[in-house]
Length: 214
Image 1 (cartoon, rainbow, N blue to C red):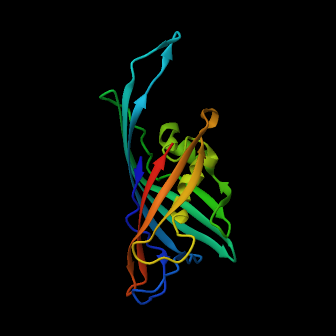
Image 2 (image 1 turned 180 degrees about the horizontal axis):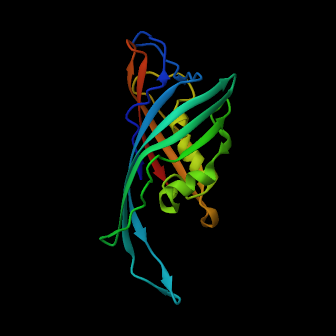
């Protein structure tokens, strides 16, 4: 499974000479609004047993895409409150070569409000139940296994790719996260990040992220 965030528009850095180290960090203020596009493709093999007998393996494939709107409702000291709205969502599911019914997002989108600490970890999620009901169980599973902790962890990943220290263009680093899957254990995520382009003239940075799951 791979994720690519082509541009993080709210990640800013001070203009610096090309050869110097840049400290990348979020600068969120009340009223800030930005959008994130997600394009996700995954494939795998599903095995099962029936009556104690192993069944032939099935090949699965999932293609999904979504656009999120992030609104900063409050930014006081190290506490930040961010409202996340799913603006659009589509998914195509294929099992053993046969398309499955895809979940549909109702008009109006689904929203959840996250409270983040200084490290951008989620300390509170408001409206999660309504968020899942709006999306439907299958769609919610795309964000982390249809559990509150897993879903909000997925939504906060846009903040988590910031490097832990200063970087130069081309620098690489990793971020790890774990998504609980209810009674099915956990989905462990390793995001491999790279500062693809440091735009000193405009103060913007492009971060490419490829995530591996186990």
